[in-house]
Length: 117
Image 1 (tube, rainbow, N blue to C red):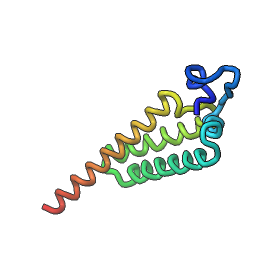
Image 2: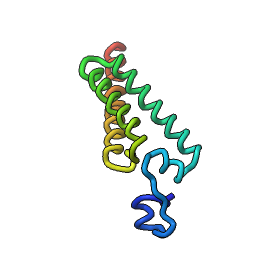
Image 3: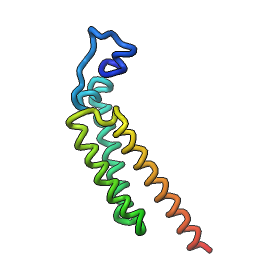
Image 4: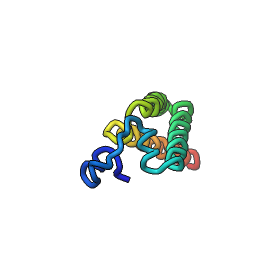
């Protein structure tokens, strides 16, 4: 860890710094093939869950699910051109998806509680 980017500038040795142009290259530097596989699994889970919310969500929640599916897909495509999840934009993707998952989960629980009464 810390062999490329600002982590290397802060804590590493500049003469041994590696250059990472893409997210995939940085994943390979930091964790090798297992980290790349883990990233693919995470990306597919996020896209799958967002797709489900886009299809099954009620009114506005479904619309936001569709919007976030496109936003997440665009972020994953952008990972082929720069390390997107190492900057603020990547953090926004994760934060927005977490907020959508939370809203969907709480609305589903609320609907189940109303049906039981």
